[in-house]
Length: 117
Length: 239
Image 1: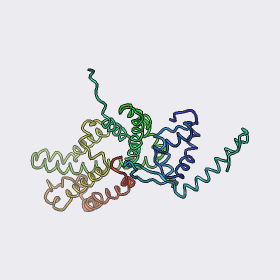
Image 2: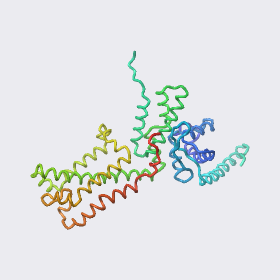
Image 3: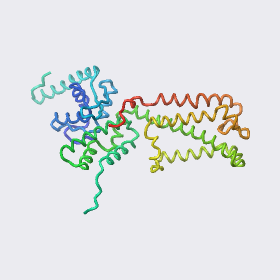
Image 4: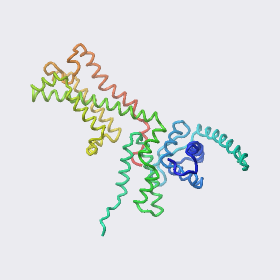
């Protein structure tokens, strides 16, 4: 389903939650914009298939980490905007600790400068 | 000059929307969200100088195949998928029951006045011909045999219309059970829409109350309130 071999399917699935929560922690956004942002930030290495994003967003919403609302954008087009809530911020904090733990451990093994926590 | 058909962007989007609507697992809110995505992708390709047709096909590819989308959405929310399935199953049962009762009533009266001899036979048959007709039409509908005439059934496309349709049927059905209808149309000792009671008269009083007040109005309404997906109210009509 995912177009590139840059990230395995498992890794895409695991990383989508912290990525989405982090993007939304920066401000509300909608599906198309989120995909663009991920593509841009990852330099094209993380390529989500567009339609697959929504089930993930809906699951986060069901888990009470984000909320959504239909709103008119500046161009007058109506879009479904997602925004993070306090539950989501808490979950993001815990995700961050876990990913940094993995990152730092691998970094030491691979002799890469550890990320700043 | 070659006979080239012009690409109609609006028609293409309409077709795509119908394909998406054919996916039973995609709620209308999901479909509208995907449509906004398609339109965003479309606009970005157009801005890069591609023509309508190229932009549409690329955007469509981006969003994904309708069938695959349906499958992915279902994996993500099994509970919702089952809610949808139960909604359609229960709706099917209610509509089947309402239609057979109303048609039995109508057929009973028609036959009584036009073909009294057939009426006698109809009552002896236990009214199964009406059930069979509704059942055959229902099976045909479920198998998509009437795909061509589906356009006429615009009321099936929108859940609000669908629910209104069921409520109207329920009201119509309760009319056939009023005292007036019962007294006016007791034919050969049978009320046309009373199917089982002909064999079990002692059930009649209990059955009358149940059928008028519970089954006809209360049960369908409870069902609709329980299963009507509330989040759809917030969805705009068009993306």
